[in-house]
Length: 156
Image (cartoon, rainbow, N blue to C red; front, top):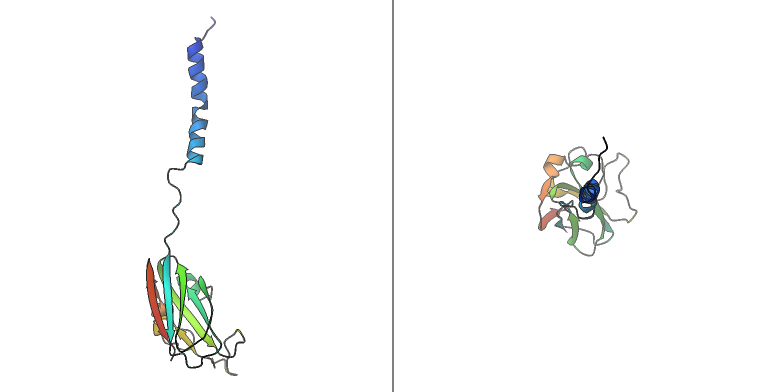
């Protein structure tokens, strides 16, 4: 027994065969839920009580994963032009800690004495104290929230 298709049924079946491919193309070209860009927060850091108005501040901003390994997520070298310096950084909202030192002699590194003790001023977020090494994460961490967060650090 031979089967014959009606012309209209053949057309409908052919159109139905390409329907899944067409739907996939539409989804790829016009995604329903595009990945949203993460929110950004602006962190303004003010550093006070800078004794020598020369050199630069070397400042690193760390998240919890990078704080103990010195893998900064942001930061830089900020020229010292007075007793107070302000810098602004863009970051995703979250918990951060800051480590910094005043590179007074401009050699790009923290100078130390023969015993490894720093001879240039240094400081941490929350004015956290250094005890036998850098301040601990729990003492230095602070929240950065959108749209703007201000943080002040005072050199001792």
